[in-house]
Length: 263
Image (cartoon, rainbow, N blue to C red; front, side):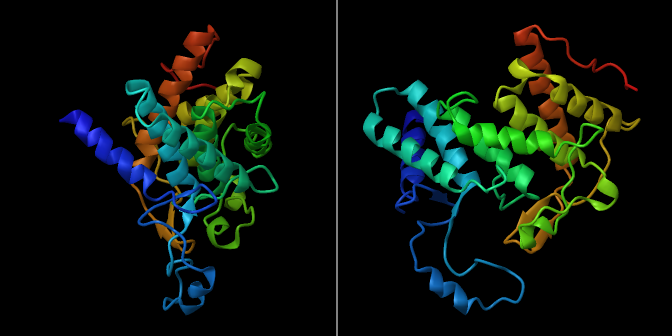
């Protein structure tokens, strides 16, 4: 039963990758001519007339295929290898000049960069053999604030230009995305200091009841629609801290204590 479900899911992953660029879409195979977007009937949504390929969908497919190959190493090996190779090419082609990737369902470049780095690493790339990963790491490091956090304005989504949060403040969810992107890319082996700073911010942001503060919206859709995901502020930072502690333990690197807040 479970094996059949896996095979059906595998078919659904293969089906959207019909475009020549190797990317995967969200709803249906992409491929309609771009000029159809001129007939967009909405006043505020962008790129809604035809389907497009996305870094987030492509990365998720890579990660799923890599896990599937471990369970069934001989099943459609050539097809899966080709799919992963093409998907990696798409992610690298979507790289922005500053080293980031655009995120379509989160605000914005930090979100896309976290996804892209995770996909490249899952496909076997690393900091040493992949220029895109090195540039992505440089983007995350250079945009980290003095307090260890990260903050992007929602206006990034529509302008595609980097605009910091008002007052140059940090957002705990975007700090999580930064921390996870750096963890995936092997930053702990090179210099764990940026990881410690981000973890310290997340720990110090926790309120008396255990929750983290509700801050600016970090969800987005079709460039101009901001979405409030209430659970983001708790699940993502806790996930990041768990990954952080696990990496520090494996590398025998001292991590920020989780038991108390830090100065």
